[in-house]
Amino acid sequence: MSDEPPALPAPPRRAGTAVALLVVFDAATLGFVTLGFEMVASRILTPLFGSGIYTWATIISIVVAGLMAGYFLGGFLADRFPGFGFAALIKLLAAAWLVLVFALTAGSLEAMIGGIDDETTALFASGIVICFPPLVVLGMYSPLSVRLLLRDPAAAGKVSGGLFAVSSLGNIVGIIVTTFVLIPAVGTRGITLGFATFLALSALLSLGARLYRR
Image (cartoon, rainbow, N blue to C red; front, top):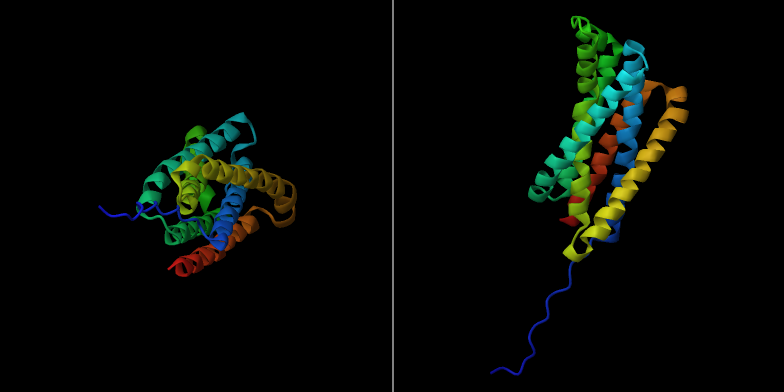
C-alpha cells in the first residue's frame, strides 16, 4: 500500500475579477434597457391606442411573456453555449430588433396595423411586434449571467440572487431615468436608436471577454 495521502479535490475555479465585473455590468445595464424600453414602448403605443388600462395591460403582459420565454429558452441555451460569444449574440440580436423598431416608428407601424379592424387585435399585434422579440432576447441573458459566474454549485443561491438583485436595480433605474429624463430630452425614437447603439457596443465588450478567456 502507498503511504501517500489521498489527493484532495481541486478547489472550485472562480471567475476572474474583470470577467465578474463585466457580467455584473451587463446584468445592470441590460436590466436598464429592458424596462427602459418598456416605457419607450408605452410612448409608441399610447398615441395610437390611448393610455387607458387596456393599453397598459397589453404592454405589461407582452413584456412579462417575452421575459418568461427568454428566461426559459436562455436556461437551455446557456448550458449549451456557456460563453461570452452567446452574450454578444444576445446583445446584437436585441440591437438589430431595436433598429427595426426605430424604422417602424417612422410611420410603418401605423400602416402595418391600418388593415386590422378590431382595435384590441391591432393593439396586441403592434405590442407583440414592438416588445416581444427584443424582450425574449434580453431575457435570455439572466440565466446566462448565472452560468458565466457560477463555478461552485454551493454558491448558486448567492450568485443568482445577487445577479437578479443587480438586474432589478437596473430595471428600477431604467424606468425612472427613461421616463423622467430621456423621454422628455431625447424622444422615443432617439432612445430606441441609443439603446440599440449601446447594445452593439456592449456586444464588442463581450467579444473582447471571449478572447480574454481563451
